[in-house]
Length: 83
Image: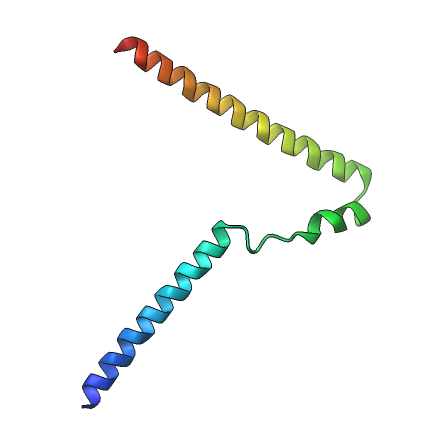
């Protein structure tokens, strides 16, 4: 009787823990923990130089993503030409 109860509690605990872990991972991937006020506060408290640096950093990231996409496309074209 006691062993059955402990086993049942263990299984229920594992199921609940796994569910909470999956919920956390889902929330993190969907941006639920992003700070939406950060941009507004940044405009109020950051200097112009800091904001310009952030804009330049975002531009560099976008350019790097475009360059990576172009490289992938070139590789795909080259592999199709070889076939």
